[in-house]
Image 1 (cartoon, helix red, strand yellow):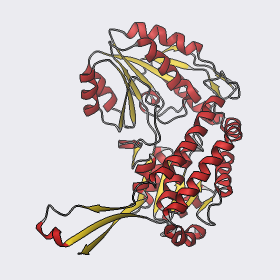
Image 2: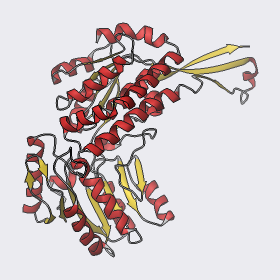
Image 3: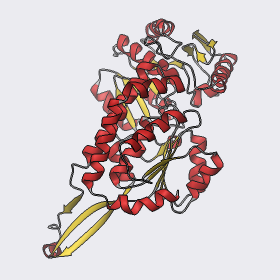
Image 4: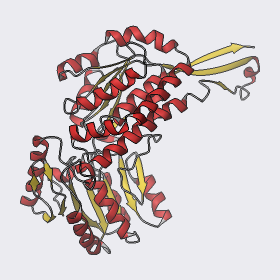
Length: 428
């Protein structure tokens, strides 16, 4: 932590142009090394190679967005004409960096989730200590090495693979101004409890629903549902977990979803046809199989899949999971989709809002009025219309409500989290 603290005054004082040039160099190097980065991640975490390449594209874009953010004036003037006293004054506001940032990232998106902490921090003038997941340190270290190759000043970015106890000590360190955490709700809320007075951003889990109404394009909905659930074995916190389908089209949707589930390619992540690769560990696969068995034992109907090959959970569709099962109320983080029906809009809204989580929900409908009602009624941070809830663009505000956390990422929004507005009021 000492290096980040000592480097902070110099990096805070660096010119906007210097920070911008560094961010652009990082983006250029990502583009230059894209295939090597993709291959490393596919081999380390089992992300299907086509998904790995897509993440590296987003990695480059995230650093470019941060660089372009600095094209905007950093000091803006506020109008004072609304107040008669204002004629004698000018008011300016500029955002200042909060200080050293401790960033904790998970294994599932080791590049772009790191970038969503590093890029806005560098743009803001903050220094960063980055803790990678012990399940994916090589990918994260490769990104940090790349950033050092882009000639970042000494101490501005460092990475540390450490125990949970050491990480907790850094979180509590009074020199750390901001903690940015992405990971499980259990760990995230525990860390926040350690430092109730400190500025913390929590990007936690979810059990995203998709609502399919009777006017939906079922072919498109099924195609996107299969990709949104089984892609990367469902190891995405906004991956579809619950498909909730209007009773009038339920049976038709079910038959199509069974076929799509059975046809989803799974296995070797280096095979370009693979959609569903392995889970990160045997322990993760054990957990998912336990949850499937618990649901079946409680009366749910297995429609497809339900088996395991090594750490690959064969794409699995399961119907009418009872509310008390873990698969119904907790984040599975695996390639299992639950299927159930609803009768009207109010029931659909109530089912989604009953979740303890709240990040994204997918909605398939052609009714614009319904979209507006759902947008205003659903208790979450994003409604994705006619697509899966996994969809995220890197300039969007991204984060959750309820047990899914608080604070927002997306380059501009993370930049605001890592800065504080400072006023300059001058008498003319």
